[in-house]
Length: 356
Image (tube, rainbow, N blue to C red):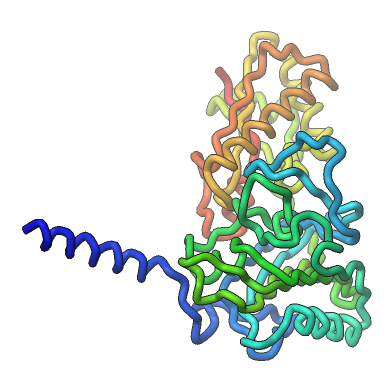
């Protein structure tokens, strides 16, 4: 009986490992295709994809450097690195992660994309390799307790939505070598291009991809943002709060993946201050909400810091009594739309005022 139990446990463990391990793909990830305006490196296969109708993107135009505050860390306790120079882009973002044909190098991949950029009259903004790029050249988007990598700046692990140990997840989170990077502008297409290529040095569960080159390609196309109730007057806020006890605001904006309130948020903050002056008894929960890109705990911390940043601005810039405001971050616990579409995610990213 004991031997039979051991055999069953061993079989279950083996089956679980077989399901979990990454495997070499024979074709593109189902549902994926190349962006219409950019072709792939010949013979590559798509192992991850992500499209957003409107997004923010930090495009490095100079190597990374360590933050002057050496105690600053990311959410995985990595020392903070940021580009010495960068473009803060907004527009449609298309991301494709490609498994490059066996025997091809990151250098060859990046040079081919560079040729494509130059053939279309584009401009190379940054090209670097290995340590030249700054940060930890041996890391992709995963890992903690060390230094941030270029991949972590382009997309931290929390924003990778591929299932754990899938090909897409392995391709973006495992250790790497021979890193190469290209950032470019495509003026005729009103677009910018980011190409990060490297060779994977994988652990056991991702061993099928060990030694293979990966290309992480982001295409950001300039596009006017859809405005969603960005400017709401104090009387409109008061009416909504009287009727339902709350109001959702979409005009309080933040830097990408940060809790810094952007300058264009000033008109909405001024209206909130006017609302509070018009009713001396009003007390508000300032509630930060996110979409579901990234882990719940990470987004809970981000939404809390964003709510606190709004309160700080109201107290500092408008003289609001801090006792009348209580910041709360709820991550993506209270969506108002589906997170399966960009339109839904945009509605879920908001700040709410709730009477209490």
